[in-house]
Structure formats: structure tokens, C-alpha cells
Amino acid sequence: MTKRWLYQFGVLTMIVGITTLGTGCQTTTGGDDGGGGDRCQNSSECDDGLFCNGAEICNGGTCTDGTPPCVADEVCAEETDTCAMVCTADSDCDDMNICTTEVCLSAGGDSGICVFTNTECPEGQSCDSETGDCIDDPEAECTTDEDCEDGDLCTTNVCSDEGACEDPVAVECPEGQECDAATGDCVDSEEEGGDAAAGETTYASDCMGCHGDPGDPPGPVGPGIAGTSAEEIAAELTDPEHVGGVFPDLGEEDYANLAAYLASF
Image 1 (cartoon, one colour):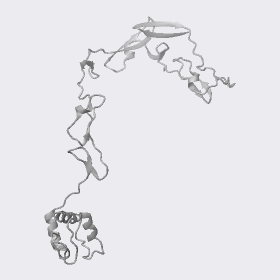
Image 2 (tube, helix red, strand yellow; image 1 turned 90 degrees about the vertical axis):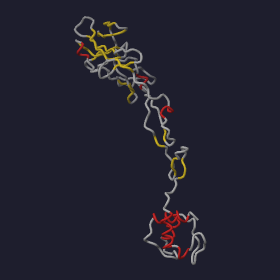
Image 3 (cartoon, one colour; image 1 turned 30 degrees about the vertical axis):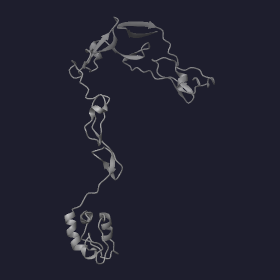
Image 4 (cartoon, one colour; image 1 turned 45 degrees about the vertical axis):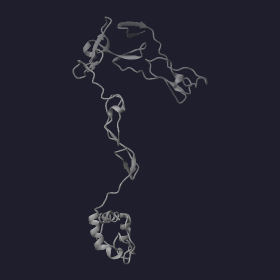
């Protein structure tokens, strides 16, 4: 004979009845294996439909009993598939949540079970977890992604499920490309330009003697090189077989400057 407490429709009722929990196993095709457990292929074949004796499992082809879900200071309500805390006073039920009311309900005996009720607030309000007061719900910052647009075509804007604008995410472009702020498209990255005036000075001192005036090719002993890129200039001036020799004193900045100057012809 077992006593079970059932709180249903706002009324605490003590139900006294005989509950047969059983082993939690149902016989399946294949018969008993002689070891006391029913044979099974999966755990669903072992389920006896009861909550309070735990979930039965199929282990190695044999049904085994489940572990009861409720701990020592709880009672199990089969009708609601829940575990309830046993108490003797309201203070036993304190869940440290200021937005709930805790009551120890008893049917006149020495102990009862804890019942928790959430604070009810008017529509458009919710309970403040710090004060327990009903406060106005915060207005959603957004309802669609468009509400979060920042005017930057090179970012993606998202409205979260909670109605808040997430941090903008930069558009990712393939290597060698960058986002065009005017269109939002990925375009080839532009090379950083050099200083044409500095390139003219370098050309006059190091290149004019062989290649002559860029605007009047060819030079005395070399071809015209107007429009040559910085990469091509670097390759030539670092090549030991370059007729004019190598120029170890020139670097990437000089190559870019020369290219900027030669691009004007």
C-alpha cells in the first residue's frame, strides 16, 4: 500500500491506492532468456508506460529496470509525471526565485508537497527577477533584419530572435578582392599607388641612361618601358642577367614609385 499526493486543478488530494510498479519490461518475440529479463531489440519494447519507476532500457538484448526519477526528499505523481518536494512548512519550498510564490500544501497530515506559482503580470508586463515587481516589457529594437540596416553595403545586419540588432558582420570576399563600399560587391583589390614625382627622380638617376625618355622610346641601349608595373620593374632590377645590372639600393616603395611615374605615359 503506498500513499501518493496529487495536486490537480488547484486542489490537493491524497490518493491512497495500491500501485504495482512491476519490472518495467514487456515480453517480446523470442521468449525469455532464462536470466529473469524479457528479451528485446530496443528500449521501446521494454517501456511499461509508468513514470515513477523510471525508463526501462534494452541492455544486451534483455530488458532492465529503470532508475526512479525522484530523489529521497521528493514524492512521485504518476498522474502528472512529476516529482514534488516534500515539506512541512512554506519555508521548505523556497526556490530562491523572487518571481514565484511557494506554498507547502498538506491534506492535514504531518507533511505536504511544495507548489510553486509564477507571479502573474498584466499584459505587456513581466516580473522583474531582481525586485519581484511587474514592469513593462522592453520594446523590441527590431522585428526584421531591415530594421538593423546601418547604411554600410559592406556589412550584413541581423535581427535576433530576441528582437535585438546583432553586431554587423563584414562581407567576406575571396583573396585578392575587397568589398566595394558603393555597391557592396566584391571587386579586385587595387594596388596601393606610388609617388609619381619620386619615381621620376629615380628614373632620371637610374633608368634614363639606358631607356631614354619614357615619352620618346626606345632609349640609347634599352627599350621603352612606359606602363611597366611595379612587379615587372622589381623582377627586372633584381635579375642578375639584367643588362643594366641589379639595383640593391632600390626597394618595394621605389618600384611602386617608378610604376606610378611610368603609368603617366
